[in-house]
Amino acid sequence: MNGKLAFAWQCKENKDHRVFKHVAVSIDITIASLSMEIGVGIDICQVTGQIYVIFAGQIDVKASVETTTPEKDPSLSIPFGTTISGTAGARIQIGRIVKLDALITSGIRFADGALKVSTADGVSLNFGWKFTGLKAKVGVSAGAGKSGGTVMKVNKDEYEIVQKKDQNNCRADAIAYSNEYIWIKEEDWGHFTWPKKEKFPPTYLASEDLKKTIKEVFTKDNKIVIISNEGFKHNLDQIINEVVTIIDNSPNLDRSLKNIELLAYDLKKALLRNYTSTSRMTNSGIHYDTFLEILNTDFQEMLNKSISLTPIDI
Image (cartoon, rainbow, N blue to C red; front, side, top):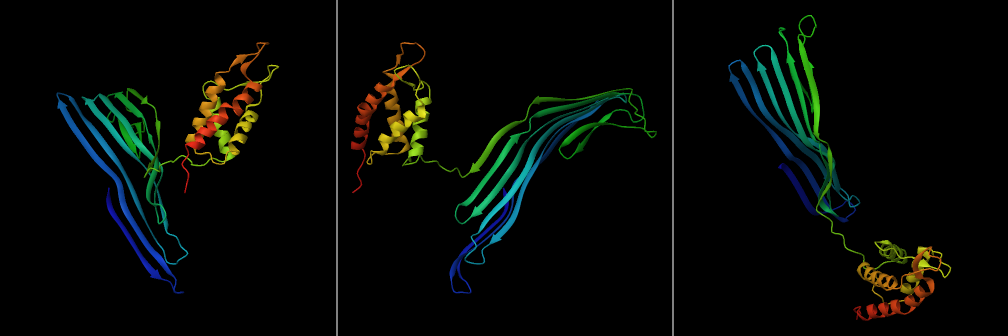
């Protein structure tokens, strides 16, 4: 990375005598630049040719922003996208009759990139990137014409095999073959973000969040099923609502995500210990009466224990 990054920060007085933070940012940076070519020539008897490798790619960003009034909060977002590519090729000619051209191409494509600068969040960089795959193109020709053979034509990032033609616009090749092979398909590498934003679990879950958290626990692995005395399944959302009602009636309970998950898993274990089959053998699960008993005894003890371990703010 090279270039210039200018950042100025100071307090200024507006025309109405209000003091505001004056910020000026100027960016002229080449984030990544790569250009390299290596080639080796051969000349043995009537066989001549060249083997070469080319790497190329560059990402440039250039923009500026400045605050001029107290109302303007400076923020700068610079979009970018580019492809860094690599090419390995070979050109071989045997006498004046047989010619071979081959290319292997690959690269990394950057898309939806943005360099952001703001007074609130500082500097950040994010972009999506994709591996363009590994492709090969081969062209072979044999002919005794004056301009026989095939050549590789480079048009931006695309490589294609074209046939040379003589002055009468007639192909001079006696035999010509060209094909493309895809050895590795394109692959999306996801999204890159810097700096990483740490995710902290919530310290207080509202009733709707309680329902979602408990439902995730109850439906993971061994799913909780509550059945009536007749053997019919109860609606799980209604069962969870009864659990949440008891939690809502415990004002001193720690309602952090971690604690609620622990309570939900403990309740699930207590319920699974009372799994049974109905007389009809149509459904198996926990009888609703048993569920209510566990809810009002075992689960209430779990809540009381959790409350006793919760630190009290003084």
